[in-house]
Structures are given as structure tokens and as C-alpha cells.
Image 1: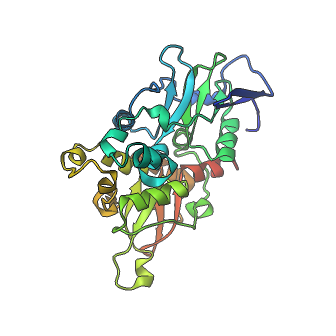
Image 2: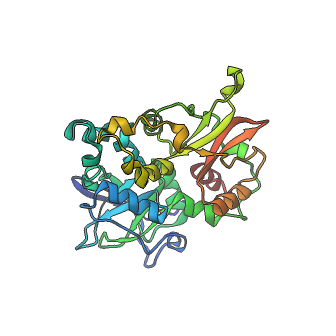
Image 3: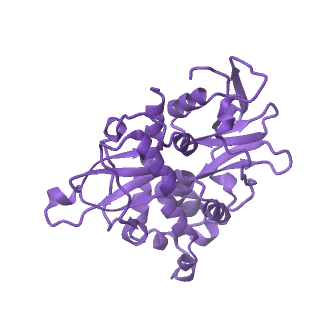
Length: 311
């Protein structure tokens, strides 16, 4: 899985390509990649971009020039969380629009998309793709042809699902993260977004519910994912019930109002193969690991990639 093809890194200054080997045909990554890619133009609003994500259950969308089809950037749920209060992109709401949430969400998506992105050639191998994802902490990689047009996209989930039932017998506890960032149900949405963006997390367990603080710190009440936040942003009730246009009012919403209650969990002894089957069946990308009703870790699709790399 160490066969190298080419990696492209796009930025505002153009594309720089490092090519070490050229193949005459498609790489095996195209066997599991999505070829019919849904992309959006840079002029699409942030609000409509979130709507497209929810309609297709995507966590990211390539942004392409509608005329040439060339890839310009990519927007992810994390970019929207950043905009929504978690990071620097919140400046669009806070400063440019003076906290006017309804005006800010109609900004074009080019204002929050990532322009400095890594792509791979459609001739890449699965091994190279896994290495590139792990080295750069990427959840997905666009695949481009010789003309730099979008040829496909491959995600961590594509790789994890392709391994359902065939991955090795290593267990969840071998690859889970034991450092679990969490929050409580009374946390405002803005605070939760900041935790997720600052730590690069697409999900955080919600804990509490016990008078004994030592137990409350590990008792699972729910989970909040980046997709839950985007779904909340898309909800018609959100706009119908707004008392003002202020983003600060929206961001006061409590985590308990939008978190998933009774989340799916796994035990540390589950095998990686069984975990991949669960991800496929439930259409999820990560789960808390629970033992004796306490959260002891969390495991995601990225952790699966680390397991796969050893095969």
C-alpha cells in the first residue's frame, strides 16, 4: 500500500504537483470512490450549502467552477461550525454583519470554503490515499483528472465501509482514543461549537446526570455531532421561532435541545470488522466506547484507517 502516484496541493497561489510515478490507467481508489460527485458553485449561499449537505447526508462538498468544472475548494461541516461560532469564520457574523445571523448565512460559500486543499490523482492507489489522509488529518480527498477536473471523491467512510466484515480481529480498545472531549447538556451551542472546532472534532459525548460528580463525569446522556448542528441550522422551526436576527440568540440554544439522546455505543472488545459493519448499518462515523455504563473512549472512521494501515 506504499505505491505512490501524485499529490496535488491547491492554494490561492495556484497548484503545486509532486509526481513520483505515472500510471496509464485509473488507480484502485476509484473502485470505492464516488464518481458522480455533487459539487456546488462558489456563489451558493452558506444557508443553501447546509441544505444540500442535509439533503444528501454529506459532511463536505467540493466547490467547482460551474463553467470549467475545475475544483476551486471544499467546504465541510467543520467550516460551517467555525462560521457558526466555533472559530475565526464567526467574524463574518460578528463583525461584517454586526451579529445579524439571517444576513450572514446568505453570504456566498466561497467566504468560508477551504482553498488550500490536497487532492490526489484518479490514478492513486488505496494505500496512498490512506497514507495521505492520515498524514494530513483529512476526512476526504477529492480526486482529479489530468485537467484538474473533479473525477471523484473518497472519504474515510468509503474506506471503512469497504472493510465491513473483512477487517481483522483487532478490537476497538486497540485503536480507540481514550482522551475524550465532552460537555454537559446545559452547554450553549456556541460553547459546543468552540470545543469541536478547536479540537478538530466532528462529535462530542454529552455527559452528566448524576449527583455524584465522579460518576456524572463519565455517564453518557447523548452525543452531539457536526451534522446535528447543521441539521439545526436547516430547521424551519429555527427561523420561525427566532425572536431576533441576532446570532447570539441562536447560539444560546442548549446542547440538550439538539443532541442525539440514547446514542449508539460499542464495547471495547468489539472487533474492527464488526465496527465497520455497524458504521455501514447505522450510517455513522464514530461512537463512544462504553464499559460498565461509563465512557472510556471514542472510536471513529479515522481510527479505522489507522487499523487498516497495519494490514
